[in-house]
Image (cartoon, rainbow, N blue to C red):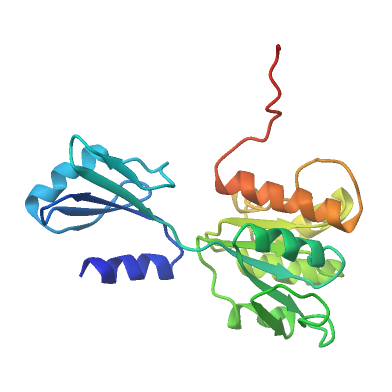
Length: 236
């Protein structure tokens, strides 16, 4: 039963925390927010005092004989648009361990020959993206298509879901136009705030690799709930 619950959570892209007392049957599975998912025994409920949702590496508490293990689904990245920015973005995401899906409606673009390194390549209309990719909490969606209408189509489909990240490329003028269209379709201000647009951290540079670096850096910061800042010491 325990492993079935873990499997179900991983399928939804949800992180969970497994707390075990060594040399006993006591096991407690909690969601990232602390919600109870499974308790092997009544005594297992007492293990909740060792819970922390911030943990990303296993911790062994030697004196208490407690093992706290985060179970983290692999991060997934969907790149909508196989243009110049997609190529370096695939490279960066590959190094960070993402499962990468590259999607475009042009047969010669969404291919391994054009942009190597992705795990999956999908060529189909942007209107049908949800037929190929399932929204999940471990999925980051990057919208870098070649046109305003395609951007709107892609964002509109993913906006209702809880994702790890949803970002859209474009100038402030273009972004405002897309937001206006989304409002006219009934999306609320609260929903629009979920979109990172214009996409990427303000790192400087306009070359494709520089833009891709800004995007992957923003995804990383959002994933770890960090506010980007310089790490330079104020005094030396």
